[in-house]
Image (tube, rainbow, N blue to C red; front, side, top):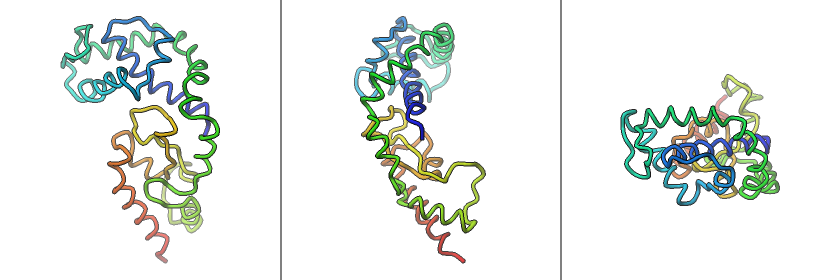
Length: 205
């Protein structure tokens, strides 16, 4: 679990919505505006909601009516976002250090990040990392990659950035099943079922 890599993930989450905002509002990219574009709060959150509903879910020819000064339909917005990102690639990359220092360290301070890393139980299924390692040693785990040996940092609300309020530690199976589709509240009963299944497997001869 690398602190700087999580900052980059969080940066990319904000950038996705900021580019969308700039296209709809016919704005040029601006570093100060980006650093202040807190997607957990309005007015930025309004564009997040538009992105995950009307932009992601509706037909490509759908035209967003709210906040859309561009007049572009979803397909045209997509093309414009890609163009804007490509044309400003170097500028955008230069913002990462400032985001790390001015935003990420405030949202998820180093001490809180380290504290999360010491968590021993999955926030969703309750299974301990020792139980999981015991199942691995007993050859009762059948995963196909290197993940699973440690708990993973998960965003409770997948469309928000990493922050103290939005982060928990999850096992590989819960994190994988939750994806970006479910909130922590929605996933809670699924997590309990996963935990029960894993623990029952350990009890079998």
